[in-house]
Length: 285
Image 1 (cartoon, rainbow, N blue to C red):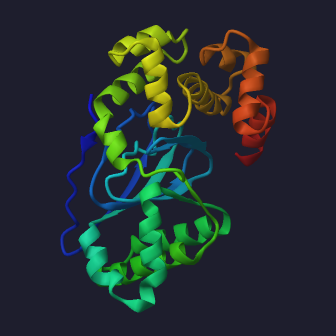
Image 2: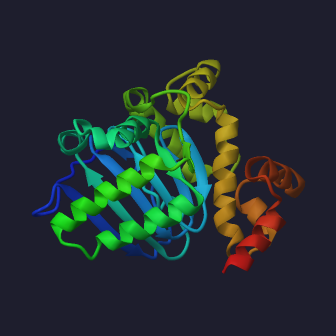
């Protein structure tokens, strides 16, 4: 179960690939992969988990992320529940280099492309405005579509309403080098998150001793294995809280044997209690 290198071809008559999908999944797999193209992912409708490099977090009411070349990431339908709609643009680096880098007017975009190696998540009004422009692309012919994409990139470049998902290091080479071992560990957590996770089992999967495994995981992911398990469980809990389930039911379904501890971990990660989160989600429906 390695991290796959995805082969991407541009659309006919175009220098990039544009995808628009609407799905109603029961559950998405990890689909952890990488490719040499820049990628824009715009989730128009849906909630799920973003996993870019070693960044792992949940999103609600859509998402907008720019991913640089060869930065591993999962499909944005990971842990999604209900209707999921997204626009994806994939464009080769050489296309942007030929079109942008040598143009002085596009200097802000050059900086944007450099930052994309960390993964960039756009927020607030910028996210909404850029998402509308991306929807406009769906109705345009190839020439107008390319010009509009330049507008999108420039708007991304000049906004300050964004977050770098992996601000401390460039992870593409490190993560791909360890992709086989890491993917086996992630798959183990994904399959057994609702049970007692045994660090000895995870270490055995990685073919490491427990101390070596703990050091390896923290170095690669920038947080401990226990922190990762808690984050994964809470992100699954966020999905379940949108359904007709009680907080106690969600707690036990996500592998927590104590509701009080579940509440504590949830508030630490989400900055709100499960009951507050559930009310907010009900209000947004």
